[in-house]
Image (tube, rainbow, N blue to C red; front, side, top):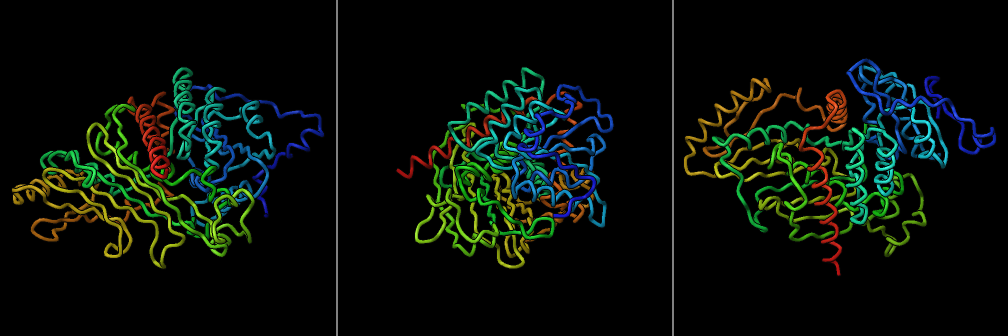
Length: 469
């Protein structure tokens, strides 16, 4: 790989040991207070094994120093990360100017904790290690912006709770990257659900007909930043990546909390898992090679191979109640989307006056679209209230317009300027986090609700595993 002169590679661990182990001078800025000043946030990227780590750096931020310190084991994961950031630095339109100071070595975590040249740790990669990364970072006095999921093993959940406690004691901000809160149809679904004259109130629902449902379909082979995504082999090992029921469902559980109980503090006791299940996506050796570039399954995946196919427990479903409201989340992973399609999202919030439905199928040209379906007795009153509501919301979201599809159904037409895409949402989350650093705190509901969210996913996995027996 050709590396820009802006990317300085530190010697690997073995060479550092040969030189007597002298470390660069530590510039411990981890406990600094934030004012919003230019370059005051110094990012340390830890073990970037997932492309989400690079997406945080897809744009520049005035508050963030352009020098980013990267600590990782040597291997293809770090090389892929460096290549992605290098591509951002050299793209034709709005190039970035990151300068990466890279340490490669088996002691990458210990090295970062000892040197602490930054004040925010960002991590996106091997999820089996992530809870440890988070806890050790906050114990060292470092703020953390972590990709989801923060925990994949129910036995590790208490460790995550401890990390939140340590962060609180030390005045640090521990936050996960919830990009889906910035998808415009979801934003407007939430806005409309908060208007009783339109939505009424959220139904209680039943296990067979939940009040709120979120379903997500993803694909192992896809394109990111215009290039085929090469996934690391460990991504297909649920002991390292996590099962689908504790991975992508993190977003879905988060959205249910965020929409059904906006800015309300939730707790573990508000959750009751009713049922859960898990199932596999089966990959042939040819599929695996197309996604990873590897011609054979590595040894650590042999445990999951039957009849020469890799069986990945990437799919799952949780039925549960949250404060008595019935909810369902489900995630499905296919290998590759048909041409012209992509990942899809389905969501319904059932209200006493209307249902708010997000569809992303063939009819929508695989782009999310928000529908409003009347469920009350007075459709005429709902229609008037709905038009008034959209007129009011258009002050906050200029350009949105209501389109009548039938006497009892409408859709929202949303300008393309709001449809920035999944990759851009990482910058939006990062900007929000930077503001929280200046504020010196997260909203009161964020930490308890993150704890509740990961309790829901890990309890869901426990229920699914028990269901298998």
